[in-house]
Length: 137
Picture 1 (tube, rainbow, N blue to C red):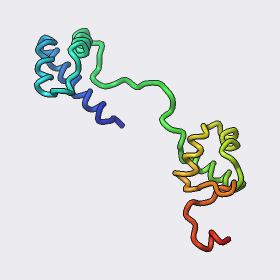
Picture 2 (cartoon, rainbow, N blue to C red; picture 1 turned 180 degrees about the horizontal axis):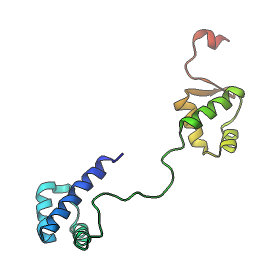
Picture 3 (cartoon, helix red, strand yellow; picture 1 turned 90 degrees about the vertical axis):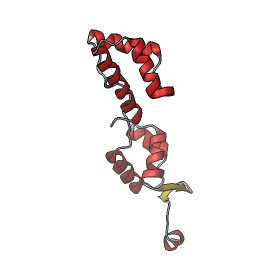
Picture 4 (cartoon, helix red, strand yellow; picture 1 turned 90 degrees about the horizontal axis):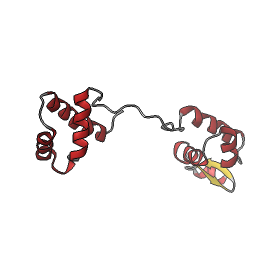
């Protein structure tokens, strides 16, 4: 899903593309964008670079997908697997989970505390919100 910055960049790039097709000079496009966007206007060099790319036809107004690390390892499969491992052994440590699942300890801790609502008490993982009967037991 595109963020608001991506949507904003798409709009000014589209404006530059259309004005370039109409053979408007980059200096004129820059002054128009300054009037429209004020502070949020791209720099003159950025605008000239995009106008040149559009003139030669080797640019698209949308961002290309980027390679890199995965968005998140907090998937429903990982959450279910961690929950089943904790149910088998309440004394399991984050380091043991990290070694068996090959996920960072930070992600495992986030899954345990945020997603599953557990906290570590006396070396055991227990649900964060316990009733009075559960606390006494």
